[in-house]
Image (cartoon, chains in turn blue, purple):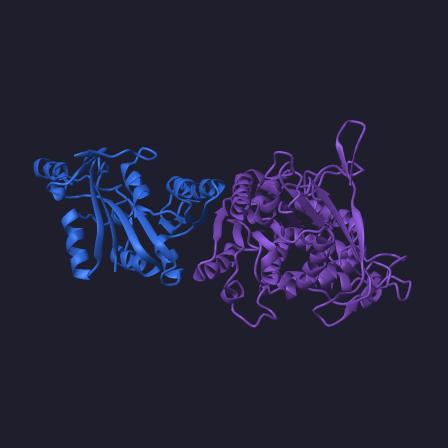
Length: 200
Length: 377
């Protein structure tokens, strides 16, 4: 088990920060205030674009000097031409999209590569919570009550692996995180967050 | 050119530069053109820090600082030392538009060939013509490439025209509460304004100089304009149904309501500072504006290969230049994978928001300019 440093308090950001090569053209879907993109511009000299639904977050992103725009992820993706970016990032948002398959396919259309980070619904704590409470699982990773969860589509590490296989995607990197640690054994049980870099 | 007043404040003077021929989109040529402009800050040695701001419909070259008669510039909150358009870093330029009446050649100027004011013999002008004159000014100042062009409303149209006409001269463009082409509704309101002026007998086919000016018509045109600059919400909260200095209706056609009083006041005030013929010419230029015009291409194709970065802003309650117009531009740029930032700011002030909601725009402009400057190196 290796410790992973964190970026802005998030270990998935740190992993993504390592995965992105210098000088690339990068689109971050759901970029928030563009902390990650700002860091990548500063340290990796990337060309950054961000999409974010919240106007106040977009304002902060633009104030940071990042070209972000206010809009819906799915609509923004449909605007871009093929292979517009080297990498398209979707961090902790896949489970909140209405049509995740369309988002993933569009990411691979406008980007040469995609990086996706998502919370693993197969983690043992989620399973235990569901098994013993008999209710919709509530954990640190999924802290919401059933009625106010932004998550629309839950998925596990195994679900993603299977989908990638079915779609014929080439997974170039897979990194599994539990807190600030990288885990390798039984990721579907032990990973809290999974990060995948893949291409068509 | 600047001086210091008795209280130690910087006084900004409008300067005039005289140019020769200016060829216009209509095919006509103006043999001599004056351009009134002001500058703030210092041009750096490499001449890479020039930022041109363009005024809206009835504005002028006095964008920042104090004029000799103590008037602050129309964007003084945005331009100055430490402000978003930071004059410690950037060299700001603002000129009065072609067709205007605040120093730059327009219909109220003397036609050198006749010695009389042009009036309606002034050729019809376009936003493209305005920008062509601005380009002459930028050449005159020795600037090869502007760091940014920025403006709200008609100023935003000029920013887009700059980016389309001279893409290599513009690193960044900031169109605010603006459009890439005038819509039927925008043309309609302008036409009402023009008809108000032209149906005033004092307008006299535009030959009113030295005589009684078409004050009624111009004032009505401005009243209509003011309605379109506000929003239902801002009118309700500013005036409601409050009566003006009375307890009960007058049962006549004098002023009953506060909103009537406000519009009459604004209309009357406008007549003292604006030329009716300039109103006709400039609104016409706006109505003709479509950045794809004469470029034989779709909006996306116009900006196909541009390296200009864009910061596009709109306001939620602006029904004169609604967000969808900004979004059309944003989506077109996105479809060609161009560099564009966009945000719709929340405001109840209607179209006026672009001059009122300064706080909201401050950090955006600051961040965008810094990012653009960084990209130059």
